[in-house]
Length: 307
Image 1 (cartoon, helix red, strand yellow):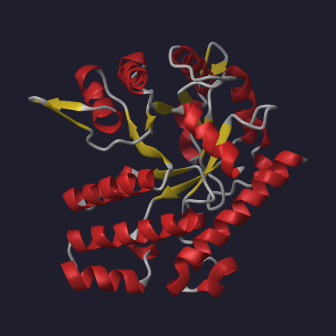
Image 2 (cartoon, one colour):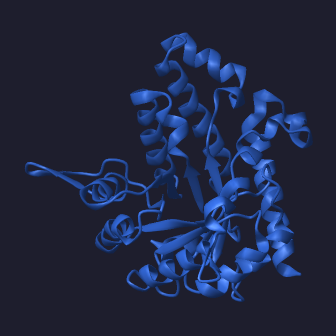
Image 3 (cartoon, helix red, strand yellow):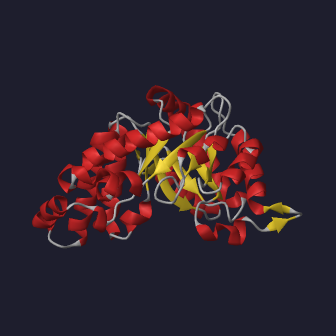
């Protein structure tokens, strides 16, 4: 799967992933009115609004980018209707030729971790039939429980040619409470990075591994160190835009071949029409605003990498 992601990045010249993390406050009035008109002000109505919102964002950006990253928590808060909207979003993005990174941050042990892996990346056998429950191409994985929690995902990746991004150094302000703690004079995030490299050696593509890492754009110097520790791991970089990251902060996440990282923006793209820079589009043309914001992000990153 990493080969396919890299091919998409090369084709679009855009190491960019759009985070499909909707909230009701982001969704334009006309989308909400249509959804509520059909389903009422219910969980089903909100889920329909999410789905229609996502569909327009994808329609206006799919040709510019290689991948999307729906955050499952935004959908789970709406219960079963929300999960249906998540499933429909994943399927639609794949129809459009996009790589789908399910931002699920799962991590458990034994059969529980295996069930998460199968549910999101693999197949389920039911009697004589085989089903693909969600069918993402990559998922994010929390390594806090150690190899017991990660190995089941690696096994499914090997079986299905899928991938994972392991949380190594996240972009949130309090990440250092645990991730920066020293063990034998080394921060925990470096030790996790070494494990990512080990897991990745078991699951290689042509030049990079199907086991990647999540490293926040808000910590560029740590990104430089982790890039050396994990030379074959693709790095998923959250924190661009709304959390403060910019193209100039990202150069250390990439290898000399110009590959090795893909940068996520969520609110900065899907809610672009609410940003002063794109307010001229208005709520009626929110998809066009997202397209413009995507183009600007791609240009910002390209220019930074060319310096």
